[in-house]
Image (cartoon, rainbow, N blue to C red; front, side, top):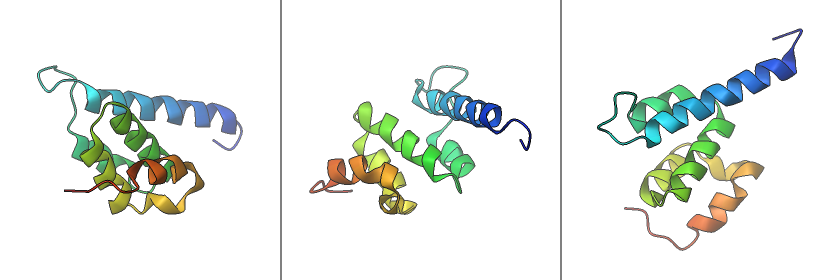
Length: 93
């Protein structure tokens, strides 16, 4: 990590994308991973949580995206601005 920070960043981003894709797979598939496990793995990494919320929002899983967004206070990060506007006025159940 110290000598190759860009490589570390690319590997971390790819790992995050892989985990997110596993949560978005149908539950019947062998490589499906429950959303709560992925959320737990991303705690402390707000950029990964924001990306997870964006992907859920894109797939019209609004309630799950809003839950993660508000639970982790992602509105305070500049990358979460789009989601803050997208969730404005929506009711969270």
